[in-house]
Image 1: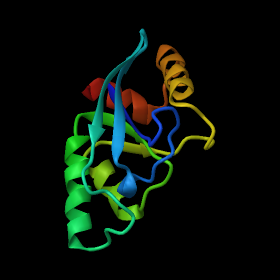
Image 2: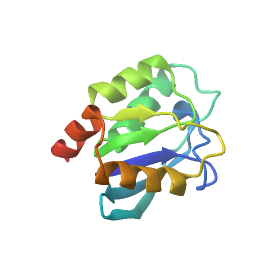
Image 3: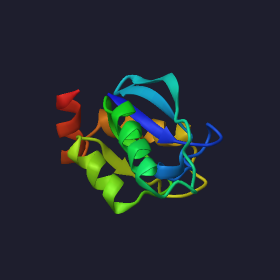
Length: 126
């Protein structure tokens, strides 16, 4: 299953979904994880607050369509609902200091054990 991380430093989940200029994509299973690619989002900025911004949000969601989870520092209600409608779960990390690698390691352990129902369902789809 693929997991996306909205990041500006490729270490932490430190980008707001709407303003994220890139997202790191990882493939993850109970056996481990591997980096796949960095998606670049052109024109994402906190100054984009019009219809053009909505188009960029839609294209961002489309680019993440094969991901199961997207980790974000924060996200608005409408984009979160749009992600969920597409079967992508937006998640905020427990702390701003938590590193992507730490999150991945915890997810691998969760997958080896007893994942929550929403994650089991997502695993079955992927």
